[in-house]
Image 1 (cartoon, rainbow, N blue to C red):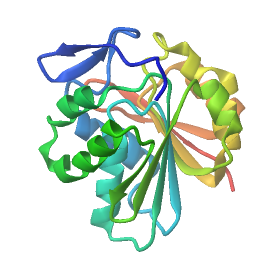
Image 2 (cartoon, rainbow, N blue to C red; image 1 turned 60 degrees about the vertical axis):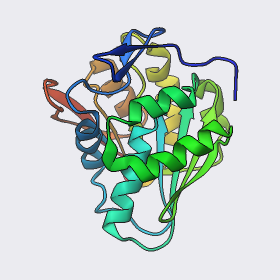
Image 3 (cartoon, rainbow, N blue to C red; image 1 turned 90 degrees about the horizontal axis):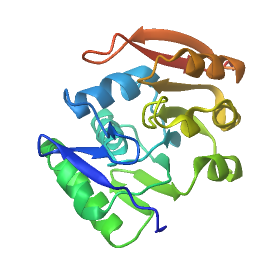
Length: 225
C-alpha cells in the first residue's frame, strides 16, 4: 500500500479521529446507526439490491460502511454478487482498523475477513456471501476519473467539507456523476450548500433529508434515467 498512512488519535478510547483532518471517522453517536441511516437508507438500500449491484464510496476509512453494506446484502438474500469499490488516499493500518471495528461486534466475522486481507496487503477482498470489495488507493481526484467502473449507489463519506475540501470539489463530484449508472443514487451526511450545488450542477436531482443523531440534515441525490 502507499506510504501516506492515516495518523490517528482516539476519542473515548474507541472512536478514531484523523490528525490530518481533525475529524472522527464515524459518528460519536453510534457509527453503525449513522451508516445505516445516511448511506443505506439514503440510497434506498437494501431494497434496490440485485445481482451485480455496484456500490462505490469516497473515503474507505475503517471499512465500516462497506461491511455494513455487505451485512445488509447478506440479510436481504439477493442472489449473485455485490461489487463494492472504495477510494482512499490515506489508508488506515490493520491494527487501527481492528481496534475501531471492535466497537461493532455484530460485524465481527465479516470484519475479520476484511482485517485479515488488509493485514496481508490485499486491496481486493472477498467479504463473503457474494460481496466483493476493491479499495483503490490514491488521490480520488486522479484515481476516480481513470476508473472504468460505474456505480448504482455512491457513499460520499470524505471528512467534513470544511476540513477536507479536496474530496468535495465540483470536479470530483462531476467525476462521480460520470461514473454513476442512469437512475443511480448518492448520499452523504453533509448538507453543505456547495456540496448540494455541485451535485446538482453535475446532473443529479438533489433533496435534503433528516440527518443522523444531532445532525439536522443530510443530502440525497439521484441521477435521472
